[in-house]
Image (cartoon, rainbow, N blue to C red):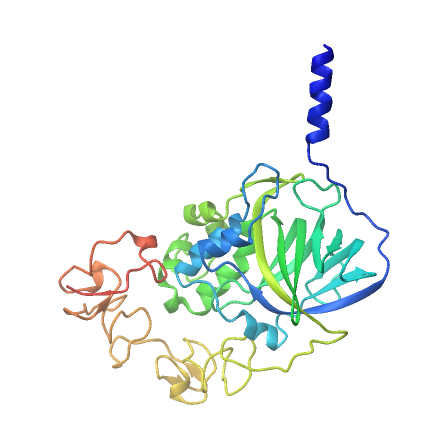
Length: 379
């Protein structure tokens, strides 16, 4: 009996102890704007950003892995910083501390916008200039945040509510790199607006995603029911655990912070992928000096349209006889939904695009690359 008690006391003494930092938080509340966001673009990124959020010894970043997979299929935007520079993403972080080098009671809040009142502070400490947060795996006072992150191509930023949040800050020459981690309770609902916008705005650029998501009925409109009932989406966005009482999908990304007392402290730089109608564009991110616009978009001249058809200020539909590669075509005026099949050496995505009935080497649909279709040539 005495030996059992001694072993229990020894085990308790050796077990790691965690002490929540709960304030009071004093000192200056310093504002930092987010001037760069990095979502995982590869499995390596997803693993690097991850941490054990529920204490099971496994690093968690389920949604990061899903985004990395979508990036391999060319469905994740690389233009998040363009959105930041024009204010489409205007997020900030508030750090309250007496000392930014060593301080035992520090709070960090992540704000989606300046008027965001939904953030719950993350407590922690500054140690040698780096912020070490209360860890999601053991804290009794987890943080929470609404974040706006650039995910889908041809879509607005995705707005996500993160629970069970921890935020690390590592200093650099111009501010901090933040690693933000948390849990999304309903990942399909969070992803749906971006998926819908991506597929519906430029359907010919995402033919396989359209085919996969728009199936009941096939009407060019992607509904939440269709996305929820997609087996591939359900697999990618499935909850991967329970974190501080919240069942959901883990997510981690990085953001760079620069000190800025008010405003954005950045000079707007319009681009063709910033989700704002600017520059010479005739429609959102197309026309003028940008890529051609799809059917139904506003235009001024034929060159504003992919189809080279601008009638009464509106882009016309793609055609299988206009001498251009547009719509679902895999080469000029053939393949895709066109009646004409493509000849040997011409572009293809599927066997049905080719007059020979063979497009490259055999390929398994969604895993082929390039939006799930193989980019190859007819044999």
